[in-house]
Image 1: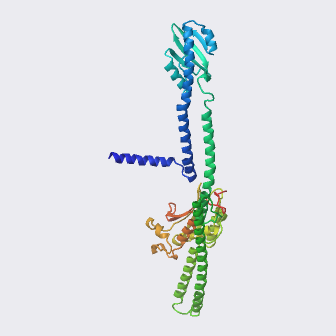
Image 2: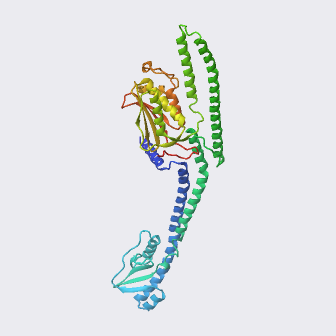
Length: 456
């Protein structure tokens, strides 16, 4: 039981220590390198002060004790006391007043002086090292009077006693600066690799050259090979789908022409509907497969993009309106036509299952948020993940006799959001009671890969 408590407390302490540690690799590397330097410097300083510096101070103090003993003997025997004090360069004053014990808390050598004086001078009453930091004042009991003596602090303390501490301080700063330059140079390739990988994850192509240590270069070359394979795969898929589209449309066109010659047939309308559905399937599949097309990101006015979608929809007779737009139109680096297609898919989905759609745009500190709300039946919470799967068709009752589609509207929007480093979220519209589809995009990167926050 006791051991389990100790283990539990140790785990809690480790968690707290992890919270204190820096999050970045550079911060942790600097912490690992610099903290031991300060610890070593501190240990060396303390060891020197205690074993060497205090020993020198104690020895010099013992030398002055011999002179004080001689001066006290001459005072008690009345043997040329004033002359001896002048020769020994010790100021003296006889009376009833005495000094008080005073020493600064940071005066390490002063404490060593007081210990040595008290150990060697039984008649010592007090030592004052604060009234005049350049002198040592002490009071001796020479009954019935009190003998007050003063002499230079240099006689009991090594010259330039703080020189080593200052040297250690500046050496620590120099070593820290050199370590900073070294770490910065070594970690820069890792940071560039992380930025290139993040940019690629958001659909941007950033120039990157492997550098740094052999391990980092190896990781960089692996990333470049992986990126090249993915881009080649996308290009091949686009070319293949273009060919498939051409090959399929040709026989479909021939079938449509053949059917038009038999327009009087009873099955004509059913067969034409089947052809229309096949073409719709082909177009939807090509849209889904081409949602990661090679469109280059560009600065886009997102408010104008939303307004353009609403105007296009209203011209076709759809009930689409704007719910909320920011006061200052945000401009951000995105693939304009991809975002436009994702929002049009969400609007089409809203109009397919509802009677109206409302588009809103909100700007936050770290993300952009598009939302499309409708007054349809919505999607139950337990079916949200299913609705985002390609070719997924939910309860047919949601159709409302408006055409059910092929189940690719939401997956295409999700694919486009993910290619921008964002996410598509589904929820319930509190205002209209239907579905609320939200596209969240983080602060984007410009084509060079640098941070580019939304600007007005």
